[in-house]
Length: 120
Image (tube, rainbow, N blue to C red; front, side, top):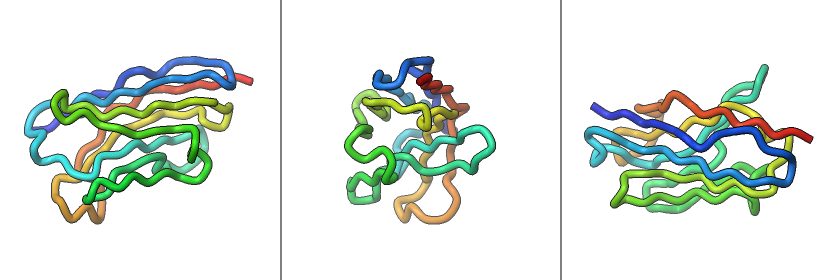
């Protein structure tokens, strides 16, 4: 029904930038509150940047001022611009979305992830 495909990950040095993309395929009209999540080795998955149901953006504290989430509805694509990257930003980055506008509970759709590695 819905497929989310991330791209744009890679290896960069600290201070560098990357832009992640998440292309949505299928019943894209059913996607709500899309966002980016990451999981570092040995750590729990955490929310990085998300959209609320009213379009408000939310960022975890460690990325505020450095990361920007955006979306292009015409292209059914979600982006994450990551600047001033730090080694602690290393991890697998996933995009995800809800299937309902209430945007509560477990997320409905997940991509396969794209790896980001930041070296010092």
